Amino acid sequence: MISARGLRKSFGDFEAVRGIDVSVRPGVAFGFLGPNGAGKSSTMRMICCVSPPSDGELRVFGMDPGKDGPKIKARLGVCPQEDTLDVELNVYDNLYVYGRYFGLPRAEVKGRIEELLDFVQLTEKAKAKVDDLSGGMKRRLTIARSLINRPEILVLDEPTTGLDPQARHVIWDRLFRLKQAGVTLLLTTHYMDEAEQLCDELVVMDQGRIVAHGTPLGLIQEHSTREVAELRFGVGEHEALAAKVEDLAERIEVLPDRLLLYSDNGEAVIEAVHSRDLAPVATLVRRSSLEDVFLHLTGRTLVD
Amino acid sequence: MTDYADAGPATAPTAPSGLVAGALRMGDYWLTVLARTWKGGVITTFVTPFFYVLALGVLLGGFVDADPATLEGASTYLAFVAPGMVAAHAMTIAFADLTYPVMGMLKWQRIYYSMIASPLAPSHIVLAQLGWVVLRALFACGVFLLVLAAFGVFESVWGVLAAWLVQGLVALAFATPVMLFSLSIKGEESFALIFRLGMIPLTLFSGTFFPIGNLGPVLEAVAMASPLWHGVDLTRMLTLGELDWGPVAIHLAYLGILAAVCWWLAIRKLAERLVS
Image 1: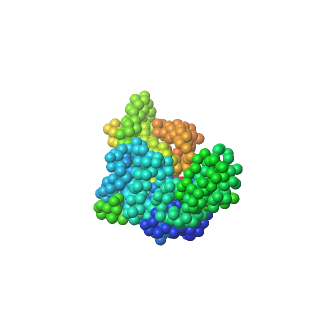
Image 2 (image 1 turned 135 degrees about the vertical axis):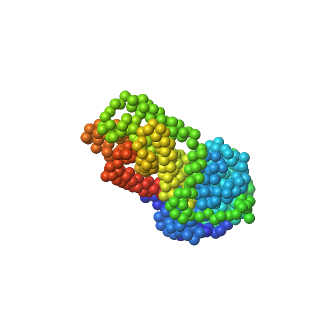
Image 3 (image 1 turned 90 degrees about the horizontal axis):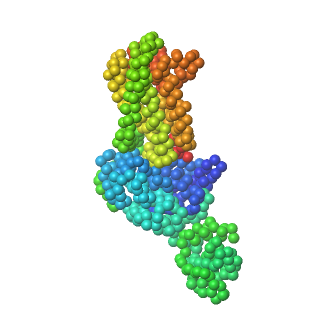
C-alpha cells in the first residue's frame, strides 16, 4: 500500500525526516511512535500528498504523490492532528459537504452519513453544531468524515491526543473495528499504550530517523527484558543509589523520580534490593512495555 | 463486509476530471454556507444600499441642482450616483466575503486544510470561492438595479442588463486581490488597514458620488488608477446610455487583467500556505 525508500523532508536548514524506509502492507495497523518533533507528522503529510518529499522515493497505492496526488487522496482517509471541522455547520452538514468533494452522488453521501453517524455514535447529535460537541465527539466526527469515501488507508495523526481516558477508549474501540473490517490504518502517536493496543507493526522514530521496527511484542522482546522492577527512593537519592543496585539487573535506567531495573524476574530483584538493607519508599514489578523500548532506544542508555 | 460501510451501492471516490468539475464539487459546501448565513446577509446586502440611495441619492441629491453637462450626462444627481453605488456595492461584497471568511478558513477553523486532504486542489478551492462571490454580487446588484429602475434613472433595458453583468467583473476584480491579501497576511489586524485605507477611500473618491474631474488634475489621475473608478465609469456609461467604446475597452481590460493576475497569484499563495 505504501512504500518509502530513503524518504527525506527538509524545511530550510531543518531536516524533519532524515531518510526513512517504510513498507506498509494491506490490512495492517501500522504505527509511527515517537516524541514530538520526531518527524512523524512530516512523514504523514508526505503520504497524504500535501508535502512534497525533499528526496527519496515514495509510493502510495503504487502511485507517485507528486504526480497522482488527487487520485491517491481519493482513496485515503485523513484524520488530522488538529480538528479541521467547520464549527459553524452542524454535524450532518460537515459530513455531507465533505462527501461531495469526493465526487460521490448526493443520495449515496446521505446513506453513508447515516451509517457513519451510527458507527461513531453521534446519530442523535446529527443536527448539533460542532461547537457544542465535546473534544471526544469532535474527534469521532473527524474520524467519520475521514471515512466518508470508504478509504483503503486511514491516516490518523495523534488520534487521541488531548482526550480524556474514557473518550480515548471509545476511539480505540472504533479504530479496532475498522482494522477488523480490513482498513489499513496508519497512525502516529506518542502514547505507548495506544501503539500497543492498536498497532500490528510499528516503527520507532527519533530525530527524523527510524530507530527500530517490528511488532509491539517483538520490539519489547528484542529491546527489553520480560519484567521491570521500579524502585522509588527519596527525592534526589536515585542517582547515588543506582550504583548500589545496578549489578542486580541486566540494565538500569535512572529517572528523576525512580530507578528502573530490567530483569526477567522482577520480584527477585526487589528481594535482593531489600537484602542489601536498602529501603525504597515504594516498589513495583511490571511487564516491560514500549515505553521501556523507547527509553532504551532513544534515552540515556545511548549516552551511558 | 464491514459494520461501518456495508449498505448501499458503492461509488468509487474519484479525482475531479478538470478545474470546473472540481470547483462544482464545492457547490454544496457554498449552498450549505448560504443556508446557514442568508438571514444575516439580508440587511447588509439589500437594506443598507437603500439607505444610501434614500439618504444620498434622493434626500441629499435633492439639493444638487447641477447642469447635466457636469454630471457626465446624467439628467439628475440620482441618475448620476445610482450606477456608482451599484458598483461600490459589488466591491463591498467582495471585501466582506474575502477578508475575515478567508482568514477563518485558513487559520481559525483550518477548513482549507480539510479541503486539500480530499482530491480537491487549491485551484478548485479558489475557483469555487470566487465563483460564489461573483454569483452573490450578481444577485445583490441585480436586486439593487431592479429597485433603482423604479426611480426612472436608467436609459435602456439593454444598458441595465449590460451594467448588471459588469458587476460580476467588478466583484471579481476586487475579490481576487482581496483574497490574495487575506491569504498573504499573518493576522487579522491587517484587515482594518485595507478597510480604512482601501475600501472606504475607494468608495468615496472613485467617482461614485461626484465626478472625479472635481478632484483636480493630480488626484484625478490617482482616482483613474483605482479599479473602482473603472467599474463605476463603465457602469455609468451603460446605465446612462453614453457609450464611448475606447474607454469601455480600457475599463474591461483593466478589470479583466487585474482579476486574472490576482487570481493566478491567489492560487499560488493558497498552495504555498497549504502545501509545504
